[in-house]
Length: 93
Image 1 (cartoon, rainbow, N blue to C red):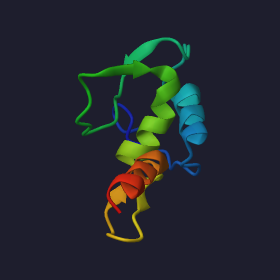
Image 2 (spheres, rainbow, N blue to C red):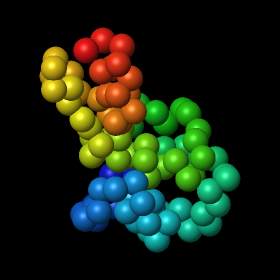
Image 3 (cartoon, one colour):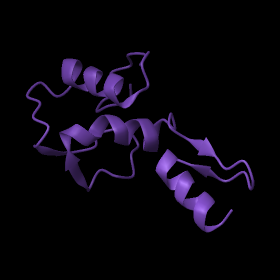
């Protein structure tokens, strides 16, 4: 885990739910899905934007860990989420 000052824990569940569980247990002690906060992933280019706590797990899985990355079978371009790959396939490939 690279949250904040790099807690160093190994994330054994890279799903959005698994990452959110880790954040709730070790980092964000007062968790409200409707509250907004900043992504504190170390070295993150997104430290100036806020998002709902409910989005942290999915954001980290897709943007920082690439756990949801899917390649286009026709052109090889990689997309962070399945819905963006689907849109690419419909419009370009």
